[in-house]
Amino acid sequence: MNRESIRKQLVEILTGPEHMGINIDPKELRDSCSLLADLSLDSIQTLELVVKIETVFGFAIASRELRLDVLNRFGDLVNYVDRRLSGNVVEAS
Image (cartoon, rainbow, N blue to C red):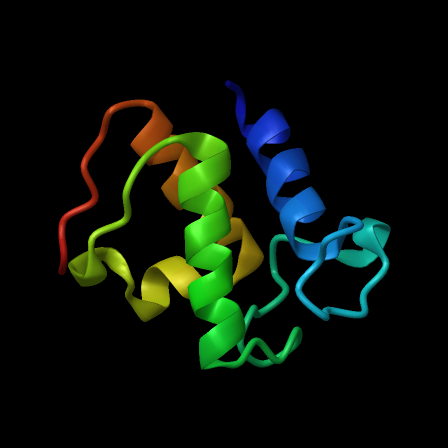
């Protein structure tokens, strides 16, 4: 799966019919958007996002991987999923 496909899937998770209460036009969801500040994801929504990512992309996310550098910006999340699907384990820094 290429980065653009991953991005589209994540946009669908965040803004699709079963979205997580995020009111943003999918066309305005940029890589620079902060999931926490711009989209105002709370802790429950963040957990829901993690579960949906695990379900859609078919991998488990270890708690040590849930860091600000993964969940800060939308582009960071796309990069994280891309690395995981490529078989690269994301180590805690």
